[in-house]
Image 1 (cartoon, rainbow over the protein chains, first blue to last red):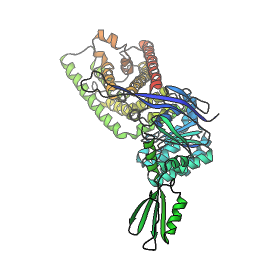
Image 2 (tube, chains in turn purple, brown; image 1 turned 120 degrees about the vertical axis):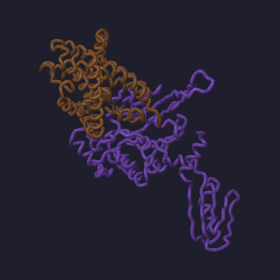
Image 3 (tube, one colour; image 1 turned 90 degrees about the vertical axis):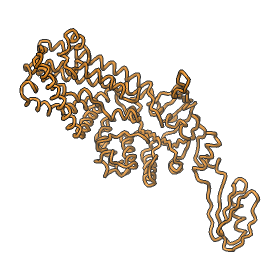
Image 4 (cartoon, each protein chain N blue to C red; image 1 turned 60 degrees about the vertical axis):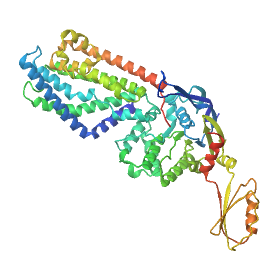
Length: 321
Length: 263
């Protein structure tokens, strides 16, 4: 049996709109947040969950963390139904909601941690060793005695992560953990999540809009749109399907290189630089490079694939999201 | 159990952080106390009432001293409900109602002690008829203290009912101002319940709001005999049980239907 099993999960929300002029009643709209999602996740996996805003990512996380009841469908995590066995179930999970906070605003964060220690009944010895480990990994040493309100966004996120992992959960759900963080904090956060996953075998499921997060962390990615699962597999496979364009920029030592390129290729010249855009499915990259080399002595060359965000945008467009 | 004790301690600590609010609260309540007592003096000059002025002024001061216990909501909790951080509390292996009940209790207890004790000391020092008189008897003091604890229990249960409604409306203001109006009127904060017409008092003293501060104050000042105390304490306990049951029911209903909105 897999660790997480989700089968045909559905959830709809009723959105009441402001009454239009001349109408007697408000209009109600039924929004389907999840329209029958199924997937399995094995223990120790690091899964990325992406999709445009409103795709149902957070809804899935809320259901799996036991705070939202779905309309129909089944979900089992570690043999328990999150929304039915809430009190027993939540002992085994850690959650980080990127936009919200679990630590107390006006008191030093270490006090919030000792409250969590009591809530989860973590034995003193265990708490100490886990704290030491997390404080070092997340570089919280200097922040422990500081009230939460004085921390920067990056520091806050590190503090939140520590809070969510104190009780050594088997699984960690992260809902947009890198939102609003600077480059250094993002990198540190990713390193930490990788470390936690490797060191303790914690299963991690994260939603994000930052494709770099997925590329750096996740072996597996699920794409969600309009409440349905559109893709489930390796990030590389996903990108290959939409990675249609490459760009080569070359500079020649000779002034007039004799380029002999097929018609389908786009060529732009400026300042002695030649920018060539082609699709590898029509001309394999090896053939392209051979053609370029035949034209003259190359002094400089760069080969780029399209920006990952563009690919995802193209994918969302093709999937009609 | 440890979790609940811990959240109690934590909320006490947090309340201690707001010393500025405490001083502001004391000044404000002192002002109200003096103005109200002066008002009753003026009224008594033209026509003395059945209740002696010393008792009225004791009543007013004790009401003001424990004002914080009645009309105080936890802004942190309301924010949590509004911005959805309450979702974290839902992910904890604790009983939600108890967890929040304890949190509210800590705030009310600490908040009212921090304000009430300095105020009572000052009020004791005021001249006779303007401040607080000593308790009618040792038994009156004892039963008054027990009644005050029961009042606090009722108070926290009422607050939790308000929170349960806030979870539905997301904004505490409407429900709170409605309930606060009932509270200040029917608890005797605005006008001592002892000054209401006797026929009204028969009903008002039975209501839950009279159990909060009115009952303990009357036991303290000897208006209720010590021999009446068991009956009054029983009435308070009854209301505490009813209010807690209503709260638990509302929370349970909320838990099933609750939706944390937004991504």
